[in-house]
Image 1 (cartoon, rainbow, N blue to C red):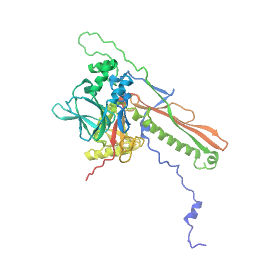
Image 2 (cartoon, rainbow, N blue to C red; image 1 turned 180 degrees about the vertical axis):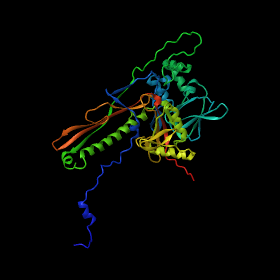
Image 3 (cartoon, rainbow, N blue to C red; image 1 turned 45 degrees about the vertical axis):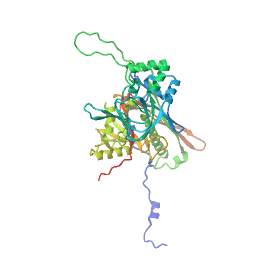
Image 4 (cartoon, one colour; image 1 turned 180 degrees about the horizontal axis):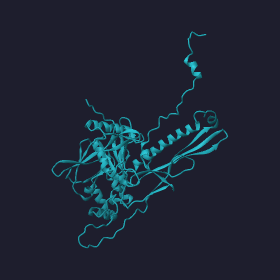
Length: 467
């Protein structure tokens, strides 16, 4: 006997039925990118992007590496210089050896406007800005350059004066080569000399430009009309299906005995599908072959001016993707940093409802948050050469009709559980465990280069006192 006057809650629970939730998964995100992408259903499994013929060199960056504690130019990457595109490896190695290391501090002038451009600079680490004197004597900012970029190739090659002033924004390291190194190389190699002559004379093509179409305009007289045709790329890029895959295993006795109110196999499948979709979105952004961050053309990359993402920086992105921009995509910390900069300037961004959620917008373009966006965390050096507390912001134009970014998936797969995702029963083994092959097929394609742009070296750790 006890001194209780009524039934205890613990005892009463034995007669009660609990209201159960489905299994919850903390790693599930809204996956705004996958919801925003217009998906193209492929019947053949291959998506070929046909384009006009384009003159392309590379990524407009010269890669460096560390040798015995000192930065060195990767010789093969000197082919980024147009007239060294077809140079022998020995010539490239000779020129690479001519680069010497130079350290600079924030605020230091690296090149003065109007001075002889007697050195080619390659930024190994750091950030600098190009400024020029305007028509009425005012100072104008041309662009901000960062790791791997070089200046000024045209003036250095032609032995001209520097067309702008370059001033360091941060401390850093650069590699420099004297003009005499190029002259010496050209004097010994006829192929380099002929390419150099064509470049200096201006007969070379501009990298990234399309082969022109000859046209005539006007209505005076009876001129002979030009004849032309539009040339295509000989080897257009083809996108094949990639996949995220796993084998889900469920014991038959678990399914048979414990699936009264909740189907155990179904819940296991739903959680596995969530994990597959999260991996799919990460690959769409970061895969080294087709990920969107790796698909940005050289001319579509923008450096932040002050580190923090400002309205000016996002306007620069909009100037790159000005034909019907659809969405920004950024890490949540970058969106928060952008909001702080807007608050500091007194121009709070407008909030709009998209995909059932309130989202910040800039110039009417929503900022989609995603934790799959590359983000370097911590304080100080992270050992990889990338600054910590930095990320990137992507701007995209969407849709096949607008020559934008599209998602790719099969039109139909066997045992389809969701579009582009199959759940195939592999049978039951002698232990009574049923296995299911879970496969998500997908890819993404950028139809033309100006459909996507990226803001790089975005710092998210700057805060302001508004008191």
